[in-house]
Length: 107
Image (spheres, rainbow, N blue to C red):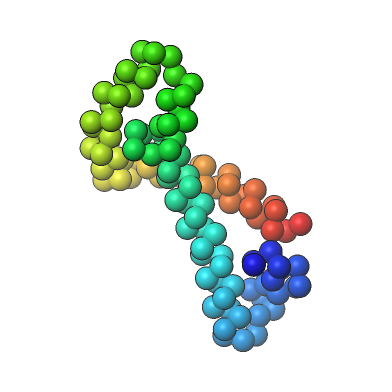
């Protein structure tokens, strides 16, 4: 929907109605939230999908380690959130995906 709006020349600078500005902002935030959730879901901790992808490529010893790590993954996740280290994991990936999406939307 945002791409269609941009194709018709409607962007944040040219929207004059408050409803149009709200719609544009909502669509933009929905994209940003979905990108953050997708990147967060790809963390290589066992409850997330990133661990399932990594598990597929690991040798047997790595799979055993991931099985043991699953018990502690919630504590690892809480430690990442509490210390702020998650920004070093998520922010670069988010910026890369956001750059690609901005490129696609600008075509």
